[in-house]
Length: 353
Image (cartoon, rainbow, N blue to C red; front, side, top):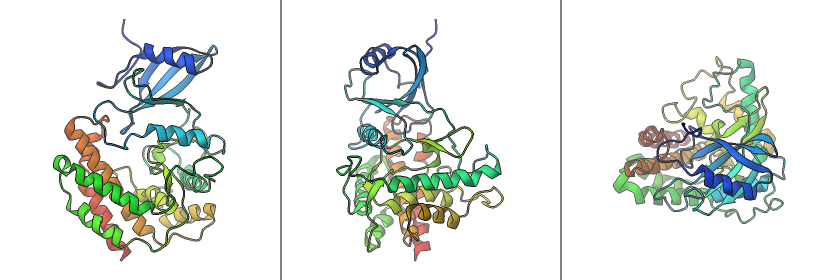
């Protein structure tokens, strides 16, 4: 008899051991019926866990660290769990976070369990699967949701020690520069990356906005929308969250306007008016209104920084792909776009001058 569970090769785990553990920590859970791995989860493999809780079907999501040699500070599921758990008291849309398990003897790596949200995930920001009339409301909801995150009082949710309040961009540039240099023997040199490593610190804005909680990877495909309306049920993938610069966090989301779909899903070659999507200016204005600010003067700089950081992430994926420890089927595609993303970042530098 074939197993009801579905795993990608090399990412299987002992479902019986998981079931024994979850019976102890989730009230009313009696059994696991099925585990199936989601196609996403480049950094941390993610699975749907269908179970019986108090006699009813209940679906959870399990997010784990990947097996194998890991880059220090990467795959920070502990931080993901902490921030999602903290936000549950604020009304901000996150899935209920149930338990963090750091005992690697259960399924082989640390993991956490959250509710599985029943809604829509949009993988392409041009939103081909929805009516034109719904596209701008979805975009504005996305911008407003990010603005709401940047308005969260970190003191009230117990996250004042979640990151350093000052120097976010400088620390990020230094971090990704260090990771890039540490991996060049495996992943190779990229000239545009090295130009950016010099230019970004030398041309940083003279003043940063007040630090807030930031997501770090806020994209449309990291959100679950309600099935029938432009409402967010939950924001996912908090691995890169910290205390930092909200305008740089917005720039990462806004970056979709200036990248082609060859790198990540983007709108660079999309006719916005024809496709019922808001313009760059309309999107920025929506975010600013919700946050109560007038504009983001250094937006081009922050977009260049975000593209540099994404190029660094891709460079790290290239290193993992070369070593054979990358976990996503898209790893090869990401690894092939390091130079493209670094070159796009340098285009933003030219634009900002």
